[in-house]
Structures are given as C-alpha cells and as structure tokens.
Image 1 (tube, rainbow, N blue to C red):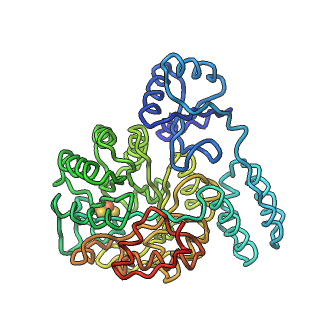
Image 2: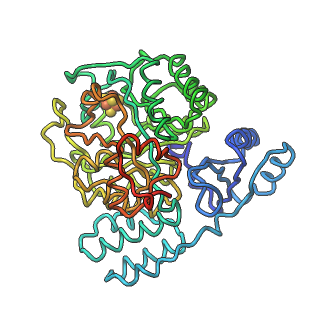
Length: 452
Ligand code: SF4
C-alpha cells in the first residue's frame, strides 16, 4: 500500500458520507468506524450536504447499514447519511455561450453533472490559451464559487510571530542560512496584536512562524488558550511540522485550522526544493492534521523552477483527493539571498487558471486570493477573487517586524485598505461580522453597500 493510499481511499467505489453534528461527534464516529475496520476517510462536506469547510466521513455503500447501526447504538448526533450519487448539480448553461472546443464542452458537461475530472482533463484546462476558453474557464469557476461560498469574502489575519526557522527550503527568504534580522514575539506581544484584530471584528487569526522549536507545545497551547478564553476567535496555526500527538493536543485546545502547504505534490520536485524535508513525512502530516479533527490548509506554488504542467495537474488533483479544506495556490516568487533568487517568477495567467480549476474540482472549500498573487501583480488579488477565490489574509504582524518575514521578496503587505479595494473591484461583499463602526473611526471609508 502506498503512503497516499493510507489516507486517500480510491477504492471507495460507491461513496457514502456520514455528516455529524459536531467535530467531537465526527471524531468519535471515526474512531468507532476504525475500530470496526470500516474503511473511511475525512473529506470536506460536499456542497448540498452541510456547511462549507465542515468535515464528513466518507465510506463505501456496502457499510451503509453498519454505519447507521453504529451511530444509532452510540447515540451519535448526526445530520444524515447520504449517497454521493446524488451530488449537487451546477447550472453551467452560460458557459456554452462562449466559443469553446468540443473537448472543453465535454468537460463542462462533466462538471455540470458533478463527475470528477481526470488528470488529462485538468491538464487540458491548464493548457487553455485562447481568450474565449480562458474567459469560459474563469466564468465556470466563478459560478461554482457563488453556489458554494456566496459573494462574501472571508477575511482572516496573520500574525507572523517568529521568523526563526530550522529549515532551509530553497525558495524561502527566512530559510535558516539567509541573513535577515531574526525576531520572536512573546505571548503578550502576540495577544496585543490579537486584541487589535478582535476590535475590528476579525473572526479567525492565523499564527504563523518558521519551524521554531523555541515555541514549545506548552507555549503554543498557552497562547491558544488565552486567545480562546479572551476572544473566542477561530485559530489557524501555521508553524510547520509538529508531532502527531501535538496536532491532537492543538485540536483539543480548540485550534480550528492548520496550514501546512505541500507546495508541490510531486515527489521529485518536493525533494528538489526541500533539502531538509521528506515527501512521505509531509504527506503523513497532512493526514495527522485531518485525523486530529483540524481543518487542513494546504496548497502550493506555481512556476517553481523545472515544474511541468503535468506536475501542476497532479498538484490540483492531490488537493481534491486528499480532502483539503483550504487551498492556497500562489505563484513562485524568488526571494533575495536564496538559491532561487535569480529564477523566473511564476506566471499570472497560469496561477489564475490553477485557482479556477481548483474551485471547479474541489468546490465546497475555502480558496485564498493569496498574498503571493497580490505581490505578483497589483490586480492579482482581484483577479483571483474573480477566478474562484473567496478568502483574503491580512498581514497583521507589527509594522516594525513585518519586513523581516519575507518568504519571497517584494511581498505585498495586504492590509485592510487593500482587501477592501480588491473586494470592491471584484464585485464582492465584505463580511457583516466586522466591526464597521470601529473601522470607520480608524479612518477607513466603506460604502455600506459593500457589506453583506
Ligand atoms: S518555507 Fe517554512 S519551513 Fe521552509 S524555510 Fe521557509 S519558513 Fe522554514
């Protein structure tokens, strides 16, 4: 059995899902199914069966009765058991009005019927280079985005609390061997920044760092506990690979999401860009995070040195097959002082096609309009939102430190003004949950029509 097979069961030929009423019930059910040797995996709940970015348990039809008995016997609170034969269908009539080839037309029909696309079809879409088909692809992603996550942008904010890192990823500006001013924020400094985010109404904070063992499990748990107690905010951790046991502790402490990008799902390229990492370990960690009951964030870079279209197609399919909840694809951007400093940056149109195809095949998930795409082109973020993305991450690291956290050079320090501008230009809505009264007092001008 390959490592991927351990986490992705392609042999579930007649997929059913169990949708539980809470994370605790979902984890308990999974434990019971595992005990009964019922092959299962955690996937983002597909459109039509539950909320966006929630998790369902997938299993084969032959276990339907057994699963039902288990949940009933154990008084599990669940929403339902459903066959994925009856998946949500999309109306893509508009796409046929574009001038598209017969092959494209066949793909649109499959997407309409919600039949999974194969690698060759993904590769075909990636290779589109005429204007009409490009527009049709972006439009198709936009229709599916609207159906799955609506018009409202999800706004999250990242505090990059340490740029120390024990690793030497070839593309990264904060890699171990790069000379840059190093900093670490204390728990109190982090909480002060969280407090500012809370005041403007941000619901999820992203705590990001290099792989820095200075922050022990207990220190991270203490920060998580304080944020939960004081602010009851959602928490995303992005602190690199930790032990399997730690993910479980983070989950129990209330961590909602964990961002650990694979960067490329191709083993050859993964090894080339990550001198200190093991591909198998990274895949295993993706599985550990999901199995701990934390929503998994992954994604990758487009335009890495020597990366092929075949590999990019595999990257997109990996995200779908692995059941990733939040998928951030951005262009490769060279960073000063790294082995890749002189390499060519990724291409805007290709990255936008990747975002669009990811929305088309992964559907009911969160897709950030990444900081990297906003750094590649002044309109990159707006264009990504138009191509299927729905999430923006604000850079909320203290001003005097943020210049030192540059995974790539010339990073766009996406702030609230920039996010408002991108949202408006993309014809989308800002979330109701922000504290607009306070934001306006800070001097921001926001048209109320932009709020939903
Ligand atoms: S990508 Fe992450 S793990 Fe790799 S060097 Fe940069 S901060 Fe460290």
